[in-house]
Image (cartoon, rainbow, N blue to C red; front, side, top):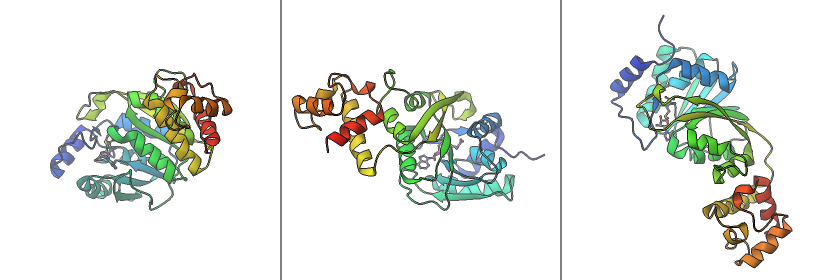
Length: 279
Ligand code: SAM
Protein backbone atom coordinates (compact mmCIF):
# COMPACT_ATOMS: atom_id res chain seq x y z
CA UNK A 1 0.00 0.00 0.00
CA UNK A 2 1.12 3.52 -0.76
CA UNK A 3 1.94 5.53 2.38
CA UNK A 4 -0.67 8.03 3.54
CA UNK A 5 1.76 9.94 5.77
CA UNK A 6 5.24 11.34 5.16
CA UNK A 7 8.23 9.30 6.32
CA UNK A 8 11.94 10.09 5.97
CA UNK A 9 12.01 9.03 2.30
CA UNK A 10 9.04 11.20 1.32
CA UNK A 11 10.39 14.20 3.24
CA UNK A 12 13.74 13.84 1.48
CA UNK A 13 12.13 13.49 -1.97
CA UNK A 14 9.81 16.47 -1.47
CA UNK A 15 12.61 18.68 -0.17
CA UNK A 16 14.69 17.72 -3.19
CA UNK A 17 11.84 18.29 -5.62
CA UNK A 18 11.19 21.77 -4.21
CA UNK A 19 14.87 22.51 -3.71
CA UNK A 20 14.06 23.39 -0.09
CA UNK A 21 16.86 24.17 2.33
CA UNK A 22 15.04 24.49 5.66
CA UNK A 23 15.59 27.92 7.19
CA UNK A 24 16.02 28.70 10.89
CA UNK A 25 14.41 32.07 10.36
CA UNK A 26 11.10 30.40 9.52
CA UNK A 27 11.55 27.66 12.12
CA UNK A 28 11.52 24.98 9.42
CA UNK A 29 11.93 21.59 11.10
CA UNK A 30 9.82 18.95 9.42
CA UNK A 31 8.39 15.89 11.19
CA UNK A 32 9.29 12.63 9.43
CA UNK A 33 7.71 10.20 11.88
CA UNK A 34 4.19 8.89 11.27
CA UNK A 35 3.76 7.71 14.88
CA UNK A 36 4.42 11.21 16.20
CA UNK A 37 1.93 12.67 13.74
CA UNK A 38 -0.78 10.18 14.73
CA UNK A 39 -0.10 10.81 18.41
CA UNK A 40 -0.54 14.57 17.96
CA UNK A 41 -3.78 14.09 16.05
CA UNK A 42 -5.09 11.68 18.69
CA UNK A 43 -4.05 13.92 21.61
CA UNK A 44 -5.87 16.79 19.92
CA UNK A 45 -9.06 14.69 19.80
CA UNK A 46 -9.71 15.61 16.18
CA UNK A 47 -13.17 14.52 15.06
CA UNK A 48 -14.31 13.48 11.61
CA UNK A 49 -15.88 16.37 9.69
CA UNK A 50 -14.67 19.20 11.90
CA UNK A 51 -12.69 22.17 10.60
CA UNK A 52 -9.13 22.34 11.91
CA UNK A 53 -6.70 25.24 11.54
CA UNK A 54 -3.08 24.31 10.99
CA UNK A 55 -0.31 26.93 11.04
CA UNK A 56 2.88 26.17 9.13
CA UNK A 57 2.00 22.93 7.32
CA UNK A 58 5.47 22.80 5.76
CA UNK A 59 5.81 19.69 3.59
CA UNK A 60 2.49 18.35 4.94
CA UNK A 61 3.42 15.86 7.67
CA UNK A 62 0.76 16.93 10.17
CA UNK A 63 -1.70 18.05 7.49
CA UNK A 64 -1.89 14.50 6.15
CA UNK A 65 -2.45 13.18 9.69
CA UNK A 66 -5.34 15.59 10.21
CA UNK A 67 -6.87 14.69 6.85
CA UNK A 68 -6.47 10.98 7.60
CA UNK A 69 -8.56 11.56 10.75
CA UNK A 70 -11.32 13.05 8.60
CA UNK A 71 -10.81 16.73 9.44
CA UNK A 72 -11.35 19.50 6.96
CA UNK A 73 -8.08 21.46 7.14
CA UNK A 74 -7.32 25.15 6.64
CA UNK A 75 -3.53 25.50 6.49
CA UNK A 76 -1.72 28.85 6.67
CA UNK A 77 1.86 28.74 5.33
CA UNK A 78 4.19 31.72 4.85
CA UNK A 79 6.64 29.98 2.48
CA UNK A 80 5.30 30.20 -1.06
CA UNK A 81 6.96 27.04 -2.38
CA UNK A 82 5.57 24.97 0.46
CA UNK A 83 2.10 26.54 0.17
CA UNK A 84 2.00 25.85 -3.57
CA UNK A 85 3.18 22.25 -3.29
CA UNK A 86 0.89 21.16 -0.46
CA UNK A 87 -2.32 20.62 -2.50
CA UNK A 88 -0.34 18.42 -4.94
CA UNK A 89 1.11 16.31 -2.14
CA UNK A 90 -2.32 15.86 -0.59
CA UNK A 91 -4.00 15.01 -3.91
CA UNK A 92 -1.36 12.35 -4.50
CA UNK A 93 -1.34 10.79 -1.03
CA UNK A 94 -4.89 11.33 0.18
CA UNK A 95 -7.18 12.16 -2.73
CA UNK A 96 -10.70 13.26 -1.91
CA UNK A 97 -9.82 14.96 1.37
CA UNK A 98 -10.65 18.58 2.22
CA UNK A 99 -7.76 21.05 2.34
CA UNK A 100 -7.63 24.82 1.84
CA UNK A 101 -4.20 26.41 1.78
CA UNK A 102 -3.74 30.07 2.65
CA UNK A 103 -0.38 31.56 1.65
CA UNK A 104 0.11 34.18 4.37
CA UNK A 105 1.84 35.15 7.59
CA UNK A 106 -0.07 33.65 10.52
CA UNK A 107 0.63 36.78 12.57
CA UNK A 108 -1.23 38.89 10.03
CA UNK A 109 -4.24 36.81 8.96
CA UNK A 110 -7.51 38.26 10.17
CA UNK A 111 -9.82 36.27 7.89
CA UNK A 112 -9.99 32.60 7.06
CA UNK A 113 -12.00 30.62 4.51
CA UNK A 114 -14.04 28.84 7.18
CA UNK A 115 -14.60 28.69 10.93
CA UNK A 116 -12.06 26.34 12.50
CA UNK A 117 -13.02 24.94 15.91
CA UNK A 118 -9.61 23.51 16.69
CA UNK A 119 -5.98 24.55 16.21
CA UNK A 120 -3.45 21.78 15.62
CA UNK A 121 0.05 22.89 14.68
CA UNK A 122 3.73 22.32 14.90
CA UNK A 123 4.48 26.02 15.31
CA UNK A 124 7.52 27.89 14.03
CA UNK A 125 9.41 28.17 17.32
CA UNK A 126 10.67 31.73 17.24
CA UNK A 127 7.15 33.16 16.87
CA UNK A 128 4.97 30.58 18.63
CA UNK A 129 3.66 32.82 21.44
CA UNK A 130 2.76 35.86 19.28
CA UNK A 131 1.13 33.53 16.72
CA UNK A 132 -0.99 31.85 19.42
CA UNK A 133 -2.09 35.14 20.96
CA UNK A 134 -2.91 36.57 17.54
CA UNK A 135 -5.03 33.56 16.57
CA UNK A 136 -6.94 33.46 19.87
CA UNK A 137 -7.58 37.18 19.59
CA UNK A 138 -8.90 37.07 16.01
CA UNK A 139 -10.64 33.72 15.65
CA UNK A 140 -13.39 33.30 18.21
CA UNK A 141 -14.43 30.00 16.62
CA UNK A 142 -11.27 28.30 17.95
CA UNK A 143 -12.35 26.37 21.05
CA UNK A 144 -9.34 24.19 21.74
CA UNK A 145 -6.04 23.09 20.37
CA UNK A 146 -2.83 21.16 20.58
CA UNK A 147 0.37 22.85 19.53
CA UNK A 148 3.93 21.63 19.45
CA UNK A 149 6.36 24.23 20.75
CA UNK A 150 9.86 24.47 22.20
CA UNK A 151 9.76 22.81 25.66
CA UNK A 152 10.75 25.97 27.50
CA UNK A 153 7.96 27.96 25.82
CA UNK A 154 5.42 25.21 26.50
CA UNK A 155 6.25 25.18 30.20
CA UNK A 156 5.85 28.94 30.29
CA UNK A 157 2.45 28.81 28.60
CA UNK A 158 1.20 26.24 31.11
CA UNK A 159 2.81 27.83 34.20
CA UNK A 160 0.81 28.97 37.24
CA UNK A 161 1.62 32.11 39.29
CA UNK A 162 4.45 31.53 41.74
CA UNK A 163 6.27 29.14 39.42
CA UNK A 164 9.81 30.02 38.34
CA UNK A 165 8.87 30.03 34.68
CA UNK A 166 5.65 32.04 35.06
CA UNK A 167 5.99 35.13 32.90
CA UNK A 168 4.24 37.49 30.51
CA UNK A 169 3.31 34.68 28.03
CA UNK A 170 1.74 32.65 30.89
CA UNK A 171 -0.39 35.55 32.12
CA UNK A 172 -1.45 36.62 28.62
CA UNK A 173 -2.29 33.08 27.49
CA UNK A 174 -4.47 32.66 30.60
CA UNK A 175 -6.67 35.52 29.34
CA UNK A 176 -8.03 33.14 26.70
CA UNK A 177 -8.37 29.90 28.63
CA UNK A 178 -6.65 26.99 30.35
CA UNK A 179 -3.32 25.51 29.23
CA UNK A 180 -1.60 22.23 30.02
CA UNK A 181 1.42 20.17 28.96
CA UNK A 182 0.09 17.26 26.93
CA UNK A 183 3.28 15.34 26.10
CA UNK A 184 6.94 15.37 25.15
CA UNK A 185 8.34 15.01 21.65
CA UNK A 186 11.85 13.83 20.85
CA UNK A 187 13.97 16.11 18.72
CA UNK A 188 14.89 13.06 16.63
CA UNK A 189 11.54 13.08 14.80
CA UNK A 190 12.50 16.28 12.97
CA UNK A 191 14.54 17.02 9.90
CA UNK A 192 16.74 18.89 10.42
CA UNK A 193 17.18 17.90 14.10
CA UNK A 194 16.64 21.08 16.17
CA UNK A 195 18.85 21.86 19.16
CA UNK A 196 15.88 22.16 21.54
CA UNK A 197 13.34 19.71 22.94
CA UNK A 198 9.65 20.02 22.19
CA UNK A 199 6.41 19.55 24.07
CA UNK A 200 2.76 19.36 23.14
CA UNK A 201 0.65 22.03 24.79
CA UNK A 202 -3.12 21.83 24.98
CA UNK A 203 -5.56 24.66 25.51
CA UNK A 204 -9.28 24.92 26.15
CA UNK A 205 -10.86 28.28 25.58
CA UNK A 206 -12.74 29.95 28.43
CA UNK A 207 -14.79 33.17 28.40
CA UNK A 208 -12.45 36.15 28.37
CA UNK A 209 -12.54 37.99 31.72
CA UNK A 210 -12.87 41.53 30.30
CA UNK A 211 -13.48 43.78 27.28
CA UNK A 212 -11.01 44.37 24.44
CA UNK A 213 -9.97 47.74 25.90
CA UNK A 214 -9.41 46.07 29.27
CA UNK A 215 -7.34 43.34 27.60
CA UNK A 216 -5.05 45.95 26.01
CA UNK A 217 -4.62 47.74 29.37
CA UNK A 218 -4.07 44.43 31.21
CA UNK A 219 -1.44 43.25 28.70
CA UNK A 220 0.42 46.59 29.05
CA UNK A 221 0.55 46.08 32.83
CA UNK A 222 1.75 42.50 32.37
CA UNK A 223 4.54 43.69 30.05
CA UNK A 224 5.60 46.39 32.53
CA UNK A 225 5.54 43.99 35.51
CA UNK A 226 7.67 41.35 33.78
CA UNK A 227 10.11 43.78 32.17
CA UNK A 228 11.36 44.32 35.73
CA UNK A 229 10.35 41.02 37.24
CA UNK A 230 12.66 41.30 40.27
CA UNK A 231 11.19 44.60 41.39
CA UNK A 232 8.17 44.97 43.65
CA UNK A 233 5.02 45.91 41.77
CA UNK A 234 4.90 49.44 43.20
CA UNK A 235 8.26 50.09 41.50
CA UNK A 236 7.83 48.00 38.38
CA UNK A 237 4.45 49.60 37.65
CA UNK A 238 5.21 53.14 38.80
CA UNK A 239 5.73 54.31 35.21
CA UNK A 240 2.31 53.11 34.09
CA UNK A 241 0.45 53.76 37.37
CA UNK A 242 0.62 57.44 38.23
CA UNK A 243 4.34 58.09 37.75
CA UNK A 244 5.58 57.40 41.30
CA UNK A 245 5.80 54.36 43.53
CA UNK A 246 3.52 56.13 46.03
CA UNK A 247 0.79 56.63 43.44
CA UNK A 248 1.26 53.06 42.22
CA UNK A 249 0.99 51.73 45.80
CA UNK A 250 -2.32 53.52 46.31
CA UNK A 251 -3.80 52.11 43.09
CA UNK A 252 -2.52 48.61 43.85
CA UNK A 253 -4.02 48.71 47.32
CA UNK A 254 -7.31 49.85 45.80
CA UNK A 255 -7.18 46.80 43.51
CA UNK A 256 -6.50 44.63 46.57
CA UNK A 257 -3.02 43.71 45.37
CA UNK A 258 -0.07 43.90 47.78
CA UNK A 259 2.21 46.70 46.40
CA UNK A 260 5.26 44.82 47.68
CA UNK A 261 4.57 41.61 45.83
CA UNK A 262 6.01 40.80 42.37
CA UNK A 263 4.34 40.22 39.02
CA UNK A 264 5.13 36.52 39.11
CA UNK A 265 2.59 36.11 41.95
CA UNK A 266 -0.36 37.61 40.05
CA UNK A 267 -3.02 35.89 37.98
CA UNK A 268 -4.31 37.55 34.85
CA UNK A 269 -7.46 38.57 36.73
CA UNK A 270 -5.30 40.32 39.37
CA UNK A 271 -3.72 42.32 36.53
CA UNK A 272 -7.21 43.02 35.17
CA UNK A 273 -8.36 44.40 38.55
CA UNK A 274 -5.37 46.76 38.55
CA UNK A 275 -6.21 47.87 35.00
CA UNK A 276 -9.79 48.59 36.09
CA UNK A 277 -8.87 50.83 39.04
CA UNK A 278 -6.22 52.61 36.95
CA UNK A 279 -8.61 53.72 34.21
N1 SAM B 1 3.92 21.26 10.13
C1 SAM B 1 5.18 20.87 9.53
C2 SAM B 1 5.70 19.61 10.19
O1 SAM B 1 5.21 19.29 11.29
O2 SAM B 1 6.56 18.98 9.62
C3 SAM B 1 6.22 21.99 9.56
C4 SAM B 1 6.46 22.62 10.92
S1 SAM B 1 7.79 23.76 10.96
C5 SAM B 1 8.25 23.65 12.67
C6 SAM B 1 7.06 25.38 10.92
C7 SAM B 1 6.39 25.79 9.60
O3 SAM B 1 5.82 27.10 9.78
C8 SAM B 1 7.30 25.90 8.39
O4 SAM B 1 6.68 25.28 7.31
C9 SAM B 1 7.42 27.43 8.13
O5 SAM B 1 7.62 27.75 6.78
C10 SAM B 1 6.08 27.92 8.64
N2 SAM B 1 6.05 29.31 9.13
C11 SAM B 1 7.05 30.01 9.73
N3 SAM B 1 6.63 31.24 10.09
C12 SAM B 1 5.32 31.32 9.71
C13 SAM B 1 4.33 32.34 9.80
N4 SAM B 1 4.60 33.54 10.36
N5 SAM B 1 3.10 32.10 9.29
C14 SAM B 1 2.81 30.89 8.72
N6 SAM B 1 3.72 29.89 8.61
C15 SAM B 1 4.95 30.10 9.09
